[in-house]
Length: 89
Image (cartoon, rainbow, N blue to C red; front, top):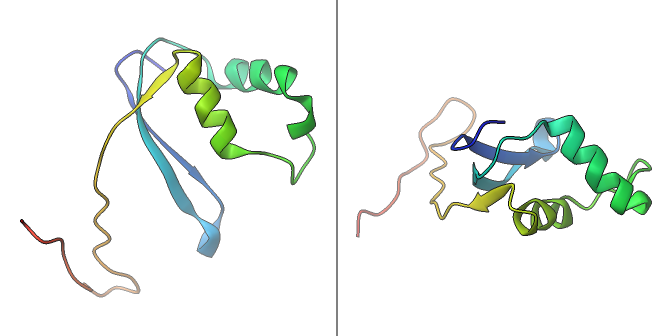
C-alpha cells in the first residue's frame, strides 16, 4: 500500500460479504508484512475462526498505518433492481 491510497476493508464471502471501514493509508506498507507483525503480537488470532477484524483495524490505526475516513454508503439495490436512494438533505 502506498501513502495516500484509499483502502476499503471488508470481510466475508458471498452473502456474508460486508464492507467494514474506508481508510486512507498514512505510510507505505506491505500488507503481508503488517499482518504477520500483528499476528506475532496477537498469536491467539492466528488459528482459523479466531480472527478479530475490528481489533486488527484498531491496531493499524494506532500504529499509524491508516486513518478512518468518514463516509456514507449508498446501496443502490440488489438482484438487478434499483431499490432507492439517499436523501439530499
